[in-house]
Image (tube, rainbow, N blue to C red):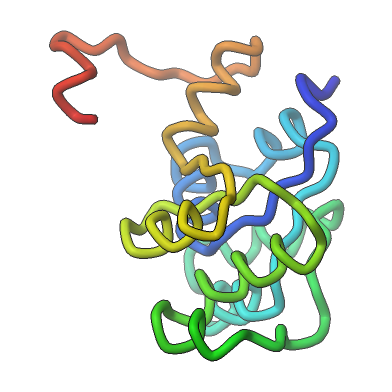
Length: 148
């Protein structure tokens, strides 16, 4: 079932984007053996209340490893990034997990500086499509290298 037995720590934006793109978070379950959601990320998702977009999908995904306690974040990460991104990187470093899902540029830069591997919403969807997961991704009509 899993293309790889990797563990991933994810930020808020990929969870919301994957919910918008697929209607659920099953793509993560298909690709990764363990998906860690830091306490701070879960709090961001839940902050708008039960009727906010994506909260119901998040709560139904009981297979997610949602941390129940706040992350103790180093001063550098705490002063550089928002709480969600900082907690993703801190959790990955503490648990020796090399892969994080972050879409925001600042978070991606800091994750690279910390020696972490990165993916994001689009990378997850492309990997899922390549592994046979039913994801509809239109073919690009231009050179994808233009977008970096």
